[in-house]
Image 1: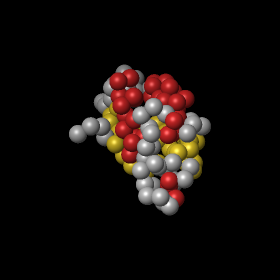
Image 2: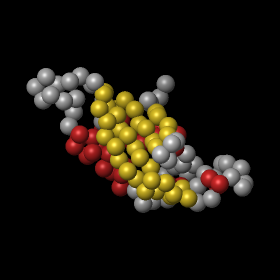
Image 3: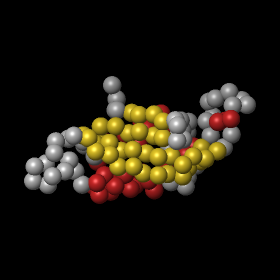
Image 4: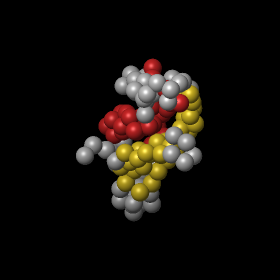
Amino acid sequence: MEISKTFQLESAHWLPNVAEGHKCRRMHGHSFRIDVVVDGPLDPEQGWVMDFADIGAAFAPLFDALDHRCLNEVDGLENPTSERLACWIWDRLKPNLAPLSRVVVHETCTSRCAYDGPA
């Protein structure tokens, strides 16, 4: 069974590797929405896959590192595309959240990427 918890981040960034004149080359901000998805069996005694509070606790340090920050200044996010942000979150979250199965980064209300871990 799959469950997810959504987090809202307000962050600024710019993409240093796009062409001069590209709108994303300029500093701008997003209201990122991050879905943290875990997968596992339904515990017959508890009646859940895991406590949503445990997902929140695992994500809390990442939230603090990303919310109201310039992502380019975060170590490992010098080129903070949504794809790289999803991988960055995965790499830091997976060791503390073993049943993590997907990280979805919604950059806008119509644009998102999903990362299911390394191939």
